[in-house]
Length: 587
Image 1 (cartoon, rainbow, N blue to C red):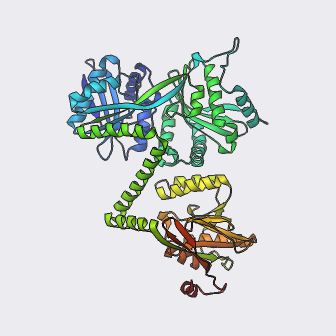
Image 2: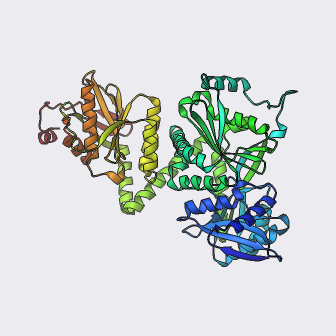
Image 3: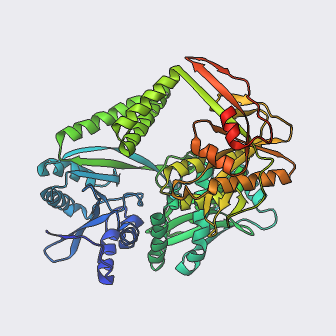
């Protein structure tokens, strides 16, 4: 066997045919093993993943082994398609497997690559045993554990009533009721886009629906990242030439559920589904999968519907077979190997107790925050901050200023415009600020608040229609202030409170905070409301921005805390026309 290492994915047509011929020849082949898949990953992630493509040739110079690995900037090795493919493997016929795996590990060891992580390796593949046998012979310690249980629907095993072609699916009556509700005027049907020309026009709609759906469930979609969107575009272009892709929509007069999936070698893959959350009560995702299985069961070329990674409950309703994948690590360091094994077993023990798991996660979060502060400002700054937090848990004093916005000028000095926050705006903001974790956390909170419907959100858009500030308005009476750990009473029935204002870090210092709260106050006055806003006395930048926007400081409340006891001090009122500097001295 002759081993060849390439550090790129060739785009040669003849090589692509050789690659795919090998992929189709192995047992339980997958669309994730194709040349098109690896090439799409390379095009999308070439800045962070550097390919290590190993090719093996037999004595007749025929391609008999192939594995697409990748090295990151820290010299860690993984499958090239680890973050995109539901299954990843060393491609070779069984008679070549052991020699091929041995040769690859030997070369990786020679290069001094000490950390190899192989995810989503099918447990029923001969690669797992070959890795375990070849690891020690090349100076690696091997550890394998279960990664996922992938649900599958074997169509031949589905029950059918005598004389009927369509299978008996779970919750049939509920399914029929939901489909009728969604298709009152136009019957529900499936539409499969298979050509790039058709997919190109549908893909943006699908991506935005996916990002929006994840937001409403408290998560950030991987499609928020530009690399992932490039990958899906490139993959669709490449696979459409082979007839392997099917971007499925469930539609009536409009689309309301999607699945970015594949049809390959007798398997229909349920890869990335999503649906319009406005119709969530009708379980559109469940309905889409049910109709897809029904359609697949009528196609003699399809034997399996593979539901992919993730143990969602709805998949288990349909599944009649499970396929296990493994998470395999190879470590040159014995100490790292032992640490990993111990960490894995400790994690399993912790997961057995929900209370203990929650406590460990909370501690890990606090430790992560401390490390982040230490990295940003140094260990001394982080320790001082920690000491202050510990001190404030025993004895603390918090003062909150309250500002009246009834005298705010309606003039808009900038070109920015105010817009109501809706799910579409939050979806755009997620993609705009995908590298700003603090803003992503804010957007997740905003999506939850939007779904509750108890507050009204506003966003400030700059001249290029980019979102540069967020704020919310709700009733003053009974508003809970975390700074005071108490609710407050409204000065008047018409009073409303501006709260949870946020400017992303990349656009701070440009006056957007003041512009936003001034425009919101003006809008509230036009509605016959009395706008208020508050700020901690210690937040000098916030106080300055509020007063610059034209709000007048009226009173303050003080919270004093000693151990578990707290008291809220009485308000210090100020005359309505008092000047800002005088107010600052008197409050």
